[in-house]
Image 1 (cartoon, rainbow, N blue to C red):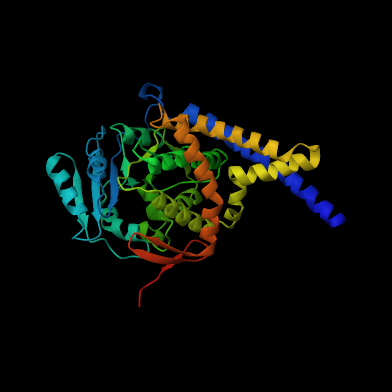
Image 2 (cartoon, rainbow, N blue to C red):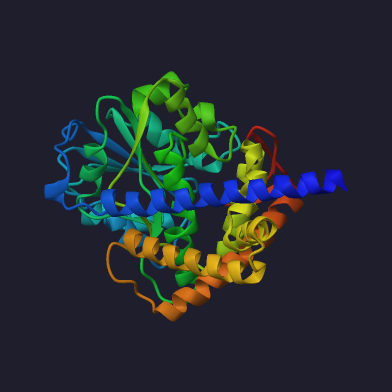
Amino acid sequence: MALLELAMQGLAVFGFILFGVLWMMHLMSIIYVRLHLHKKRSEVKQPFLQMLGVSLLKPLKGVDPNLISNLETFFTLDYPKYEVLLCVQDQDDPAVDVCKKLLGKYPNVDARLFIGGKKVGINPKINNLMPGYEGAKYGLVWICDSGIRVKPDTLTDLTNQMTEKVGLVHGLPYVADRQGFAATLEQVYFGTSHPRSYISANVTGIKCVTGMSCLMRKDVLDQAGGLVAFAQYIAEDYFMAKAIADRGWKFSMATQVALQNSGSYSIGQFQSRMIRWTKLRINMLPGTVLEPVSECFLASLIIGWAAHHVFRWDMMVFFMCHCLAWFLSDYIQLTGVQGGPLCFSKLDFAVAWFIRESMAVQIFLSALWDPTISWRTGRYRLRCGGTAEEILDV
């Protein structure tokens, strides 16, 4: 009985610590979004490296309804010196025709198409980018996924953050306004749960970077071995960021979000993507096993039980009140990340928020169940530490 009481007291202490940590994350994220994101150009500090050239590396595979419009935004950037390096793995990929169409439409833009890739490891994105990386002529490289859409001043915003001691500038991942409930679900996730963890990690000095849109110093990457050094990992963005940080460089976040605008999306695709990301985090960072207690429903249960155990408050009343406060703070954060009016109603938000929160534990358990992932055209078995091996069909 003494041991049981001791365990219950320990769980109560954990609940109160969890309460403090999670609400500190909420506050840091909301305040950061309001102060840092979506600054007008007149509010942004003067650029330090604006006139330095930038080599844009664009990995492409397949087409979707938004690919050509997304890609075209990179040909109309308001920046004095940059090149567009389009990388396609297969000659028969329909993305080749899209690239050739844009190259013909914008003959004055410094752009080249690389076809065939170069096999240097198990990461298909790195293999695809290798010829473009080797042909890059500028000191800054901007690796940006195919589904990203940019504004004319996006590259200026990125280089504005690349000050003397900064080696990597990244954009907070978000989602463009699109039609359908699956789009709303993605937008709610990338405007609430994801930025809360992403921003609070970076504010507290934890290097948290996604590779959707990253501007990096090429000489620093070359010191780490170039792109080849990261071809053994599936989560190459994490290890590239780690290599830059290990060499003493700081990170900075752009004031514009990395706007995902894929024309192919569904609830199933979203769920598969979240499971894949969770699998990668579990294999790279063992502390990921604590992730479920940072989600609203499970955290509210633990904190509610702690409040009941110590103060004899009604656990279910506390649970409902805590969930409501979480819901409202998430809505405040979402509007901040959006930077303008939402394209869906408050009812749509409530439904999407509830479904996303309900999926969280199931996604985590699915990630634990199977250590293999499917990405692009391959299947991979993850190893501890973040490396992987390709599973070949016999």
